[in-house]
Image 1 (tube, rainbow, N blue to C red):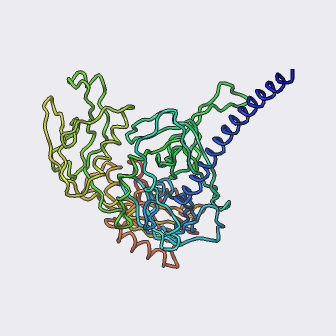
Image 2: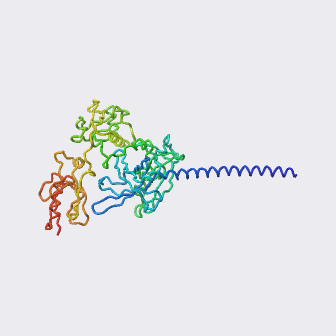
Image 3: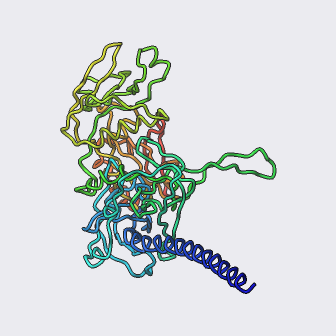
Length: 477
C-alpha cells in the first residue's frame, strides 16, 4: 500500500503543482497586462496638458480652461474649437498658460496663442518654456498602422477640472460603430477620452482625438407625466466620439500664420442641400450624390464663375461627390473640400443645370471679414458695444452689397438704461440721433460724442431687427 500512497501523493503533487503553475501563469498574464497598460498610461499622459486663458469681455475678464494635446517637438498644442465661442475675437484672448496633469494649479507654464484653423476648427498654441517642451511627448510618436475595429477595446485620458489640478484619470470602452460624418469617426459604447484628448489601442498606438457634439438621448420623467420626455445630455469634458487618426495626422501641419487663421478660402455658394432621392432618380442620377445650390453670394468667386441658384453640384476636380449617410453630412464634406484649399486655388466643379452637365472653373479668394474679426468698441457709460457691419451680416439679412452700412450691436449691458429701451444684441443700428450711419467710424465718433457730453439725457437710435425697423429712445434720467 505504501507505494500506492506514494504514487497517489506524487500524482496529487503534480496535479496541484500544475494548477499552481496555471494559476501563476494566469496571474502573471493579468499582472503583465495591468503593468503594460500602466506603463503605457504613464508615458501617454506626457502628451496632454491643461490649458488656461482669459477672454476680455465688455464688463469682466472671464477665465477659461480647456484640455490640450501636444502635436510636435516644438511644444505646439491643439485644443477643441468648443473651448472658445464663435463670436469671441482673437484680440480678446490672452494670458495663455499650460498645466501638467496633476500639478498644482499655481504651477504653470506660459504659452502663446497661434490661432484657429478654419478646416479642423482646432485652436493652436505654443509653449514658450523649452524646459517643459522637453518633458512632453507629441502624439505623432504613437502612429497606428490600422484604424480600430468594431468591438475593439480602446482607452483614453480624462482630466479633472482646474480646481482639482487637472488630475488625469483612466477611461476605456469598446468601439460600437465607425462612420464617416463626413470625417472618419468611431463611436464608443461610452465615454472613452476627454474633449480634444487622445485615445489609444491596447498596444498604445494613437487611435484619435475625442470630439464633442454627439450627445446621448435619455428619457426624463416627471411626477405628472410618466410618458417620458426625450432630452439630450452632453458631458462637456468626456467624449464617446473619436475623430480617427487618419483625420488628425494629415492636418497637424495646418498651423495658422496669424491669430485670425488667415488666409481662408472662399467659394460663395450658400444654402446647399442634398438632392432628394426621388428628384435624383427623375434626373437620372442613380448612385450619384448631389448638392442643390440655394444661393450664390454677390461678388463671390462662385458668382464670377457663373454658378447659379438651383445648380446641382456633382463633382469636385473630377471626383464625384461621395454617397454619405445621413445625406446632410454631404454639405459638410463639400465645405471641407473648399476649406482645405487656399485663395487663388482653382476648383473644377461638375454641375447639372437644366439637364446639361457643365464644368465651372472657380478661382477661390480670401474670405470676407468675419464678425469675430471686425473691430468693435465698448462704451461703458452708454452700456453697449458695437462692431463693424460685415459681409456675413449682409448675407444673414439677405442684403445687396450696396445696402451694407451701419453697425451691429455686439453687447448690451444688463440693467442699464440702454437695455430697458429695448435695444438687443445683434440689432443693426442704421441711424443715431437722425444721422445715417454709413461706416463703423461714423458710429464710433457719434457715440463717443454722446458719451462725453455731460448734459445728455437721451439719444435715439433706429435699428433693424428681423426685417422690421424700430426707433428706440435711450433715456438716462
